[in-house]
Picture 1 (cartoon, one colour):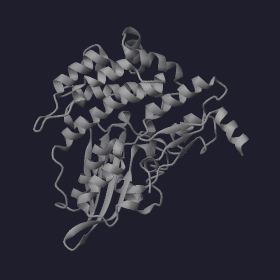
Picture 2 (cartoon, helix red, strand yellow):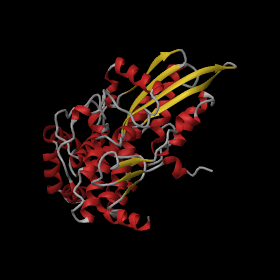
Picture 3 (cartoon, rainbow, N blue to C red):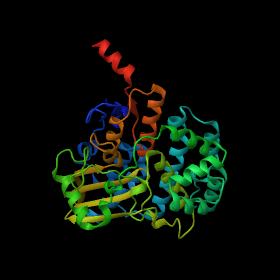
Length: 380
């Protein structure tokens, strides 16, 4: 029996090791193995269960891909933009409130957990009720930003990391304090934005990506775009408004917080159309869909065949943000390889954690520090 943790896989990180040994992924391409032969109607649920941490985005993306490939095979997703807005905002809140304290502070922060319990975004919705965005905005401004979200966002768009430094130094509370402390672990230059993934900007690029997914063995696990490793996240949105900001891993945390503010604000600053999504019919029974989810750009491609009057999956490919960002030759791997392993172990682990939090993997990771390598040699 395959255990859930084995299906999810993990990332192994080796600071200072030469590429490609600095970053190794144990993720497997389960979608292409488990989906063929299944009825198209069960595919969204299957993929949501396989990718449980981002289940809502995978369910929506699968529905969009199937609807493009074979209209009527599954009910067309209703209110896709509104769903994407809400689910992305919820995921940002969870990651900021749960992962950031655990990885950047080394332990859960009681104030962070208490603030999550009061978040309107995480309350169960009653049947027929939409999200209370006004309450979500008031909560964000009071609990995390400690100021009007529109003012915070304008300052971020104008000054980027300089604003994040100023804000975190001028305000108390667990989140500004966490960011102040995490800045010490920031290493390396700004992330090159010429490698930010925006393949969904035109149909030609999307068709080329679909062809690579269908015809290039292993592409879904080790993708490249225009002969380079790309990265994806809140900073690579199609409708981005903070173009030109220099983002180190630490400043990328500000980009994620800025997107949460955008999503909570009313139109036009945070309207449902902020996050791009769409689908493309590639041929008879073939479709490609994409959504901008919390971690970055997600793709699903399907190839369906009619069997006894019902659509069945002939092939399915999932290309998730984790595979772009944690490619063994990609941006994260290069930064991990460049770390100075002579610094104290505690600082080195904080540097690793900051890089990983900034690019946000959807699976656990393990850091092999110097003492771990020594134990491995002794054991051998």
